[in-house]
Image 1: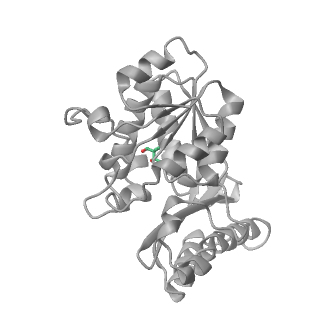
Image 2: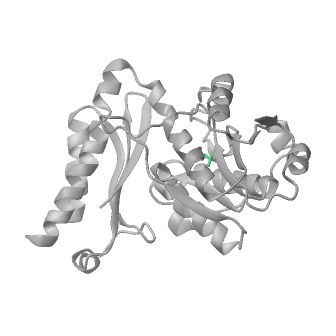
Length: 283
Ligand code: PAF
């Protein structure tokens, strides 16, 4: 595997490649990331990964400084997956001058759910992903469904800006007890790690109740969301949201849409101790 840090070297290395499959990451790679590399391999060749902890997508009081950086271990994992190039720029390599041109998602998608609680997140993600795409020029790029809203925003961005890159969504990789794998799981204490699968259990509960409402008494979706927030709070979680949304645009369904069988997804973000976890489940 070639490890490349500058944009010029990367362009030289990838010149003429028409089927590149790209997996952007922020490192601290786990099985979830490796499953993205395997999916990428099925959709293109060569596979290119990037590791870059993107300051632009972190708010001033978020975990940019303590975000886990495990470069050597990451390199070994990517080598085993047969990744051809790892692009690992420094901040100076990727942002040699202040990044004043930004790519902003539309308000109705960018300012809801995660965007409401982390306003820097999606402008930062759209900007860095656009820049990484411009460097790598991939034919396909793979993103996990764990970051459901991120995946939708990037997919819409690529379509609206006519980027020549197909966006592929990968299923969330879960531990045996249901917890979605995430680099931030490493912040959890032993007791918190034991409690953490309750988030996914809560999503399953909401999904079951939502589905049950289609065959018997229609569920009150807002009441279901509130009930889920209460269940989490009762066990010491601090939920930001539990929200049932339409898969097509992440807006809340009307009652008629729900009863007509609109495709839904339930999304959540909640803090356990100091660690903020997100997860979602297609209903
Ligand atoms: O999902 C992530 O790891 C990041 O948001 C991404 C897409 C690599 C952009 O920094």
